[in-house]
Length: 123
Length: 108
Image 1 (cartoon, rainbow over the protein chains, first blue to last red):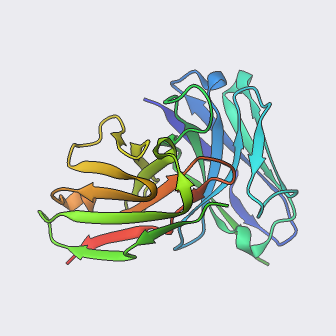
Image 2 (cartoon, helix red, strand yellow):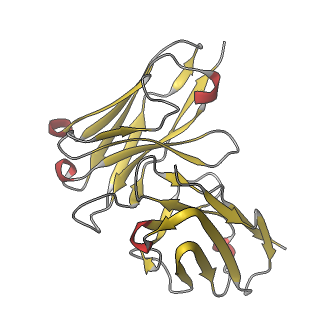
């Protein structure tokens, strides 16, 4: 069974930084694009960022562009989200998700999700 | 940015009833790029439908998706107790990927 396990969340002050990690198992991580999606408390889902299998295509939501950096290490089956200049509005549960293999090119749906890690930005 | 508007915000129904959820896009999108997710309380989202009408692996056939252009629908033919949850549509035509605001299906 595909597993995605996020870690690295916590309480951080406004302007601070945090690095989230997502470790994948039970699938060939190196061939899949990976995404981060967040959910503020009591709110809906917001896509944050995506990275292709070889890291040659990277995309960000406007709300995080210039502050967050997505990366991956295929040798460690892991994807990361470096979050800098954090704001109160970044408070959310951050989910790591796998883009499905349903289509060989272009964007895909998100077929597996981790359990999420909570990031709280507060003074 | 493609905006997805889901309606209604909340749907109050009884077990065994039929649920019809709507997702309207701000511009025409190919049905290949429309998905539906279910999120139960305290859980992560789960993929239900992709390409507007294809059930994901393990999803019961009481869930069906339809639509094209700007109007898409998720139908749950007979609600089971475990179906009371929040449902989101998502487009993945282009960045930024966007989700609808969600429809909560709760017990009447």
